[in-house]
Length: 78
Image (cartoon, rainbow, N blue to C red; front, side):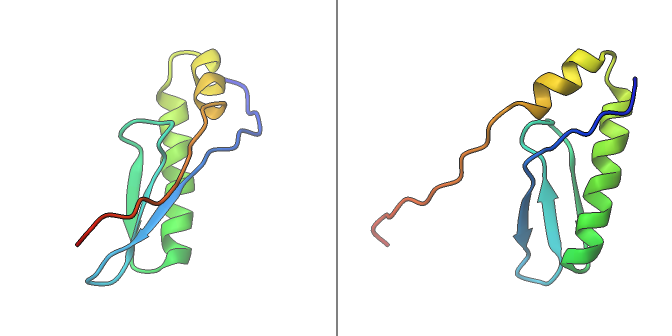
């Protein structure tokens, strides 16, 4: 696979006990965690690189990169 500049949406979530979790919605199963945001950002980049290396086709990587992530809020009674 040739090296292209691909951009992915990443969701970072701070854990109650400390640290962060990062998830890439366009790449099912691609997630990591770290003790702080900086470490988590470094690790998710590594995870994305490894995920893309495991894909059988560059076309699959490009399709995943073009997927759209929408984040919103919903109010509920509580």
